Length: 183
Length: 183
Image (tube, rainbow over the protein chains, first blue to last red):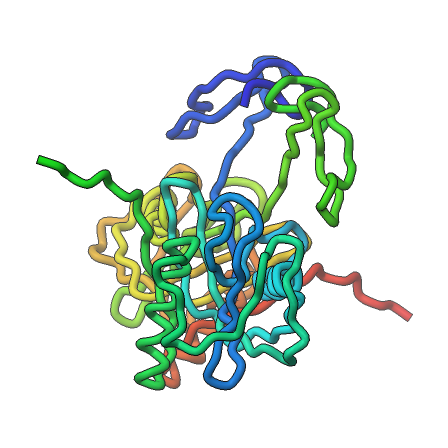
């Protein structure tokens, strides 16, 4: 951030009075520009013993598989956002069943929230951000071709809970991958 | 938003190509300025059969009672944010027990996430944003002097779950209050 979105003057990076961390503050109108994490909402769409996954047609991770998910938009609830993403990425009609997992990805200022969802019919097809959309069974999950660690994590939780027939709300952190140590 | 925070040029409110809703887009450098809901994180600090509440020393709702809560900051997890807010508002040391309730407040682009938390000692005292901090029992909850509907909602859930000794994760919407109809 270089300029104040209110008045167009330049901003400073400084700790405002009474605050405890640096913010972008306008030199002219004194507006403080707070920056906060963004919520990513998504779901695991279920149909009988299968789940719906999408192959990405956009960067990052073009060609890899993911669950329908994306940034929550202003004016929508977390369930509405997850529903919209399933519609956008897979033209899938879904109904949220339960909030299922929350993952903090602090180093990129994201919080992921996944739902379990019920796929309502089989009229799905790729949206503009997907190359293909498939219903797969658990043994068919393409572990080596998943787009995001959040997706890998939630699917691991999901498989275990489904085996034990006990779906719990999960919470965890996804940390920056450290480079491997090569002596 | 009037100016591009990247280059300082003026922005237009327009639907970018491939998008489906208006965004602020820079006329000069084409940066799209997305705006997304913010997460508010807080907790119900428990000590034996009591809970900790704070009386607000700041606007809005100066003088009314609330649970420690505030905007999640970049770089922190939702539990860390809730812990920091308890420290800031009540100098309270708390340990998060479980994510407990999520409320969408769509008309102000906020998502509230409350935890149940364990108060670790009794060395609490008002932070700069609080007039006073008190441990109260359930019958002492000042229902008519609560600051926010999210706080009222989570306390109602909490009381019921505690009575039934069954704490479930809750989710719901807090909608704009409509003016009363006076015939």
